[in-house]
Length: 210
Image (cartoon, rainbow, N blue to C red; front, side, top):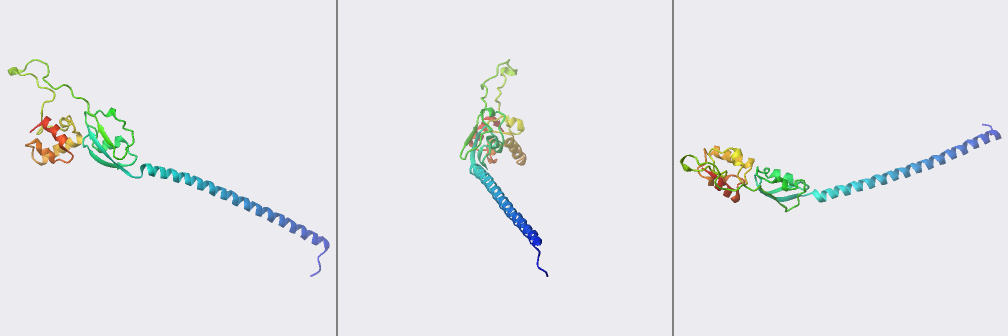
């Protein structure tokens, strides 16, 4: 092969210079891309940390259950375990719901529960107990008052729901108990029903008759 002419050497030299310049620019572009990518990772990491921090905050506030005591004018008062972050309204519903005489508007149903909290659902005040005004009935007797005893053998869910501490759930249990045992001969038999405690039994004895 013959020796290269001067013009050929110049052409080759120019091509080599161009290749060197293109290579240098490509390397710098690669470095910038890596820098941008690294910056993107940094931002993503920061975002993830913020998200993790939020998740941890939620867990810290609501990661464990809370135990609350629901008392007063609910169907099934008692101690209940509920997920953290639960509202007062959820606790009332868990306890069978408010009774017909519950003064539910006295509570903040949207408040969050705290462990060990006692929730007391107040009842509306009863009217004065006494003899109703009105003309005498046959035999000289006057009309009976509004708190007359309820016959447990014929009482409906609605009748039982008017008794302090009894809601629709417990009232239904009483009717099922009555059907299973072929009737109720004594009000004291009702203490065998799950969810009826001493306070509820006192209310039943004062309002029910066999």
